[in-house]
Image (cartoon, rainbow, N blue to C red):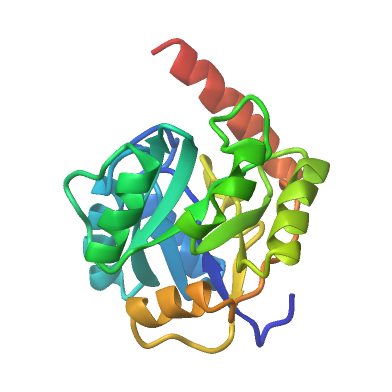
Amino acid sequence: MGNAEILAELHMHTRASDGAMTPEEAVRAAVRKGLCCIAVTDHDTFRGSSLAERISRVVEGPMIIHGAEIRTDHGDVLVYCEESHEETPRILTELRDWADDNNCILAAAHPFHPGRSSIGFKIREMLDLFDAIEVWNSRGIPFLNLPAMIVAGKNNKPGISGSDAHVLPEIGSSPTILPEMPKTVSEVLEWISKGLVKPSYGLLPPKAVPYILAWSIVRRLG
């Protein structure tokens, strides 16, 4: 990835759900890594996004896309919005209607990764419910991203990428590439839904592995 590319991290988790980092740490890491905008997508809550936006305003950090990774009746769905929301439906068809009413967009998260709450091959019958597909998730086994790439390509569905970061070294490992510097969050959402963005195909950074293992132990110990 060249220096001229405009990069956005579209999948990460903070301590508002199961991530090791605080929203402030995530924002400051994004600044260091030259990300123009980030979507904090904590599980079933927009709280991380709200906190990140407050912090980013103070430190003149990246643009914050308000997001959440919602556990629906068919698997995990990334929700991207202009502002945070208190609650979202957990039924996928209802979430689609809710997103339309609230100017949000939906992306299928890591759709073919077993062991995670993924939609799987059901996505082929549900493509109309999604604005985009996460075709590359650098936290997973790389070849498990290939079915998502194929489905998106065959069906002309926009593809995005994200790190699914839970620890700081993961942030920005596979950002989505934007066509230009965005002026507003709504502009980014429009670019995603129109397929004007491009995924990147980074791998899990080796230096992140000990942090991931350490955080796993900490969480198991409570």
